Image 1 (tube, rainbow, N blue to C red):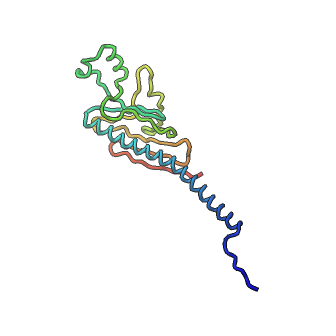
Image 2: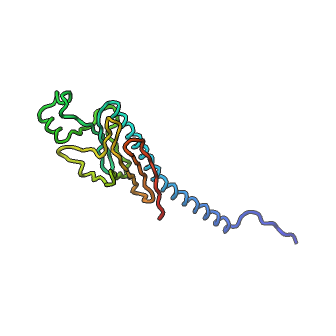
Image 3: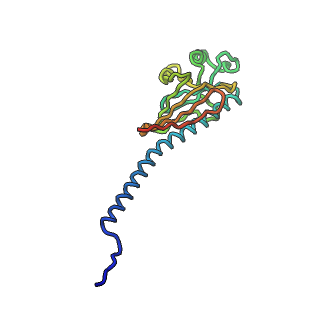
Length: 193
């Protein structure tokens, strides 16, 4: 009798291979989904860091003091208006000067981007001098916004720690730390379950 050699795969072998490939694809999809949130948050951190560097340079080169008002999802650039300066107060009404004496920080009107929204799922927390900043305390509907951070014409700025989180993934956070003199540093911290 002659033996016939079997060629091809059995149905069981094909199903096992498909199950393995499916499992690998599922793991790759989950992995890339987690990574996408971290990449989006890290990209926003780099954007913020670059923007803060531009604010710092603008303050020095224009010899003005700038401030950043912010909340969990947005920031706005402000400039300090010296009410006692004759150059500034010459074209203002008494009412405008009274309002500015309550809050000399007004919306910046120069060449830099003055407002920025965080991506939809990214949230901002700010610590200054070891204390978390209460953003609501800096927003007054009557007097206007006050800065949480300042960039001074002397090339100094408020030392800060910004923490960026993503609401779809609590396994990481992105930290931006500014020491008040040097360039900000960005660090990604990851956590295990």
